[in-house]
Length: 70
Image (cartoon, rainbow, N blue to C red; front, side, top):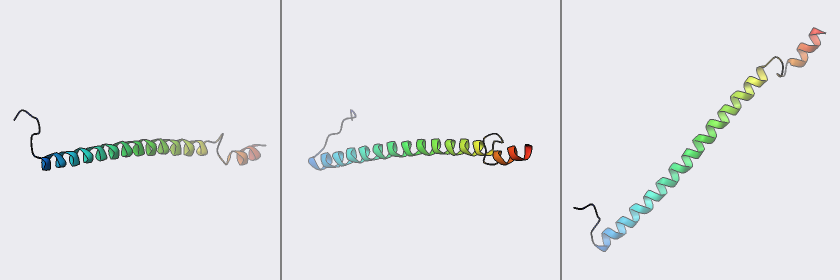
């Protein structure tokens, strides 16, 4: 009634199991948060590399453009 858990030893075991499950789920949330962060950073890096490779100045075809201009 007052928000506290009162019960038998069976309820105490159930409470411990629920607390363990909460800890497990919190760890999973942390892991998934880190994975999402790393994937976001990897995507940003890949996009930056793609832009760099498409640049006329620094891209893979820049040597061919220099030879053609000579």
